[in-house]
Length: 332
Image 1 (cartoon, one colour):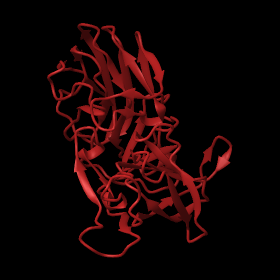
Image 2: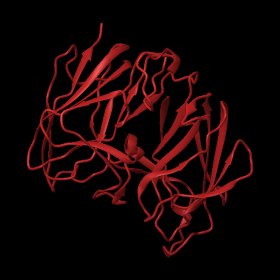
Image 3: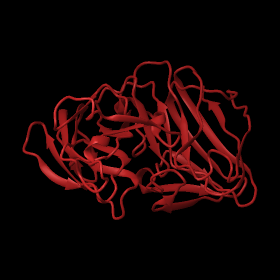
Image 4: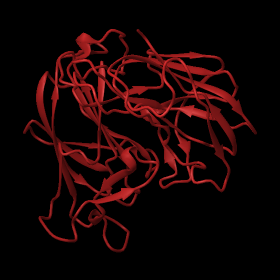
C-alpha cells in the first residue's frame, strides 16, 4: 500500500474555530527543526488566559481526500491520520469527528501523559472514493503531518510518500536494533513517539540500510554507484543534540526511474547512536498497480518526473560523531 504525506501547509486542509472570525482566534504556525517541513500549526486561543483550562473557543479543521479500495489486515478501505503535539493535561483531551457529513463521534488522543508528539488520531477504515473529515473541539493540539492511506488506483502524481523504518522494502545488514516506544528530546514537548512507534538503531560501523524505489528525487550526492561521506557531530552544545526528528539528509533532482539508496554507518564515536525513523520520496509511477517492488506501507506512485526528495528522519541522543556513507546506485 502507499501512504501519502501532507504537510501542515497543505491547501487541502481548512482551519477555523468555533467562535467565528477574529484576530484572537487564529491558528498559529510554529517553526522548528523537529517538525516535518519545518513547521507545525495549532490553535492557541483554545486555552484560557490563566493557563488553567479551555477558553470555550475551539479549533476546527476539515480536509477532503481521495481514497481507493485497499486491503489492510483483512479490512477493506482507506484511512487518514494526524501527527502533531497533543495539548497539556489542563486542556481538553477530547475531539469530535464527523466523516462525510455523518454524526460526530467523540474520541481522545490516547496520550497517557500529555503533552507529547505523536499520532493523535486515525480514522476508521473507509470505503473507496472521496471523503471529507471534520474535527472540532481542538484545544491546543497541533498538526504537523497528515497521513493518507491510498489504494491501488489513487492518483499519486506529485505526492510525497513515506516509508517506515520497518517496511520490508528497506534491506538492513550489519548490527541494527528495532526499538519501540517513545524517546525523550530536548524540544518541547520532550516525549516523542516515532512514526509507527518504532525506529531502527545502529552504533556499529558497517551497518547499512538499502532502499530501492522508482521515482524522481533530489540529490546532493554523487550518483552511479559512487558515494560521498557526511559526518554528523553531536555534542550537548550543538543545535541537533536530543532534537526529535532531525532531517539528516535531503537530495537534488535526478531522472525518473529506478534507483537504490544505500545508507552506511562508517564510524560512531563515544557510543553515538544513529536512529532511522522513516524515508520520504517522490515516485515516478502512476499508481501502486504499476509499482514493481511491492512493500507494505511504502507505496509507490506518481506519473510525473521532477522535483522530489528522499529524506531520513533520525534522532541524535548522545554526544559523539556519526559518519554515514549515503549512496545512490542507478539500475539500468
